[in-house]
Every structure is written in structure tokens, then in C-alpha cells.
Length: 64
Figure 1 (tube, rainbow, N blue to C red):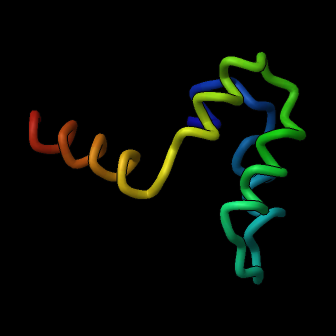
Figure 2: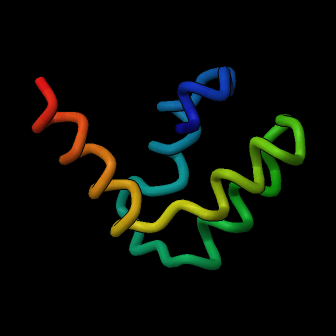
């Protein structure tokens, strides 16, 4: 999602957030709030959970 929203250096930013750290929902929420993206894109990122993100990936994989 972060890559699809064209966040510059997305993977580096995620690495900086997560490398060697235990992170939780609040950490991710604060991170998303710092991104220079439209509010709708941030709202969509805030809606993601492990369940709905992984479920979508499985659905896409099964359709191949």
C-alpha cells in the first residue's frame, strides 16, 4: 500500500520504523500520519489490518 501510494523511499522508511524494534498499531498509525500523502490515502492505510491485507493477498494469489 505504501508503495502504491508513491511514498518516496517507502521501503527505507519502513525499515527505519521496524528494524530491530517491536512495533504496534499506535506506532504504525503515527508513521502513517507523518507521510506526505493525501488524507484519503492515509485513511486507507489506517484501515489496513493483518486480516484484511493478508486476506486480499490470498484472494489475488488464488486467482492466478
